[in-house]
Image (cartoon, rainbow, N blue to C red; front, side, top):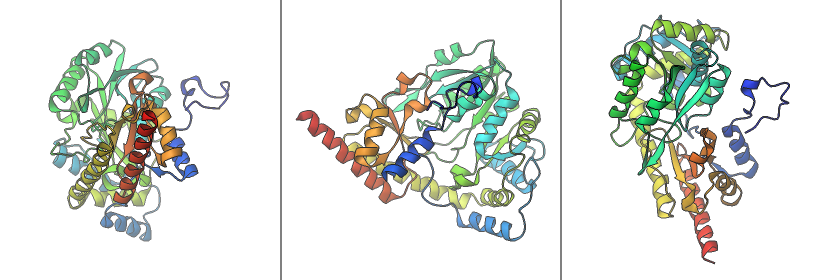
Length: 401
């Protein structure tokens, strides 16, 4: 949404950035009493043993500043997780930094690694903080379009090649992908890696949904491919994997030269993040296996519940291979414009969704797409789907009438 701050006050690089679409739509849900399938926060808390670890840390006095790079036990747990689950070992002392969520890691990486005028290639649509992060670093976004291809999203390899120029500094990459729900295939990852090596690009890989993949698909880290570890900064967090989005504990892993650069920027942003929560996330990572299978299974079932009921109502949703978002084609509800649909869904159907144009530079490309979050309780999803179905029936009846 455009900012209302006068142009002579706001720095030019941030003009056009106002409150995020998530804040806007959450306020709409609060104002209308609608069910909120817009913002991606889970309905339930994370694993009991991690919540208890946070309580114990607070009670035992773990409440003062941690080291700027993060608690040693958390960095050690992250190193173990990356080596065991992704095949990418990192030195916990020099190659890992803990941040205030993945958002700070991404912003600090862009501030630390980009010079003004550097081009940053990224796949469109993209999480909205990417645009602001590139702008704050003085960079130039160069989007490559993910297009609907059957029931999933794909890109044109020729368009990716053409996006890379002598001015390209960095690829900002996200898989599993928000908002499309795409999990990049091994073949797609190989192509991306080959181009990064060929053009000597740095990579910031956003992997916050690394454990939220379905139907037998497994997340592959771009950093694990040949020639990529030395040029890739991997970003992840506890929020999505452990249902603690409010804790804002994230991290960045990579070669020492990249992590040092990120830490240099990060120390002047937040310096450090909640010490007792860091201790608890360390416990969560160590005990992750007893939690993650159940989380994936629950989310897959909720995805199928929402998608199935929407399909029965004649509403088209694209396949969700990962994350906890469905992309809905607004045209299946008689709306060529997803923004108009979101407004009417909130006021007439009592359901808040996110217009996907918020994630595009080329707004026309996402004009007919709407994002729904299915990380909610079953009864909320069922009620939301029923409301959307009734809304769709009313639209159909009005059209026929």
